[in-house]
Amino acid sequence: MPDEPRWLTDHERDAWLALAKLMFNLPSALDAQLLRDNHLTLFDYFVLSGLSMAPGRTMRLSDLASHLSCSLSRLSNVVKRLEQRGLLRRTPDPENPRYTVASLTDAGWDLVVTAAPGHVAAVREYVIDGLTASQIDVLREVACHVTRRISEAPEAGTRTP
Figure 1: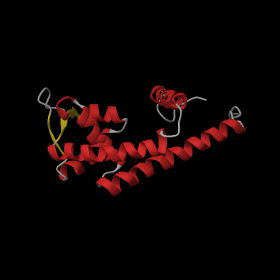
Figure 2: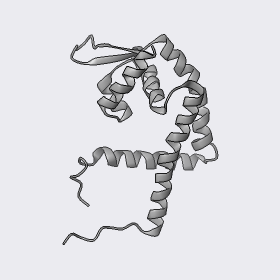
Figure 3: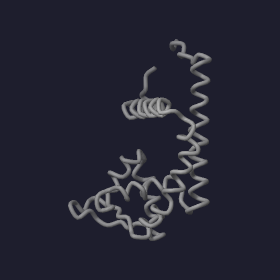
Figure 4: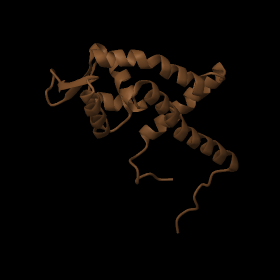
């Protein structure tokens, strides 16, 4: 007979449900702003923004996927779509042609520069403004803790309670 699950206390459940609501609502709100103002999804923006901050505005797709915490297949689909829009280009990595690099085009750079102020304003409106410096520190600490726990966890299906 399996052990009884460690059920959440009322206090823990309330915190979890608040976090779950945040996880569903925040990306949708940020997506809506970027789609309305720049015809980009939040993920598109993160891809372009990640490239905009990379040396030479170029990065291996595998490194970009790691940076964005996404699968290479998901990234490849988005990169293909962004390339069709002329926002980036894919080429073999000059250091190792077995890899592919993505490079931000001038049009991609211009779009990131145009989109950034609205995106930052939305992040301020939905997340930052109204929080104290201490709350921002706690928010960062909690987000980093949960992210670290996920990255250190064994593959799904092999977790033990």
